[in-house]
Image: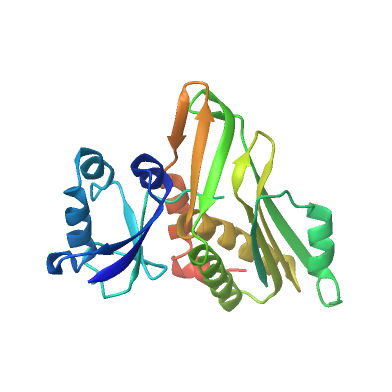
Length: 84
Length: 157
């Protein structure tokens, strides 16, 4: 399943990535599963993408960890927001 | 009703003049301007850096404005949020509202800035002499936002 991943805030800076297209396996079909799959990429990924440290959006709407992911979705992964 | 995200500064007086123009029913205009402080946790801030999520941030801000105009009879709303590198005393954000009466203008403006803090995707990094740090959502901001869920507050103003 192909999805678009975008990163903002702390994970974007620390992982040195702002956008990628990823081909994710079936077990990564929820946000929780996707984060677990991304954490396999290495120590820094495991550290930056701990469930408690990131927030997510699916197609530009905030979404919780159990939310389902579909083909071609735009998934955003970011640190907690701080505007204003 | 309009939202703008930009690197450059904004002219408060010019924005307010535009916001109120062409409608002689406007009896009240309220503006909130957020500024960059030079301190945080007893450290001196050299600068801050702000980024946003093009597309989602505008959508989130428009949703907050829609919610505000549903609760209060606002005649016009302007939100400007700056991004990029900012320094102490710089203006970061403008929320301005117009209404027939001050109660609605005040409530709408406060509601929008409170929601913006916790529901609009912006990320802020502080640069001090010791290094830099990404800020996280503040618990006090979440409390202020939750206060608006209260039913008596919902109907106030």
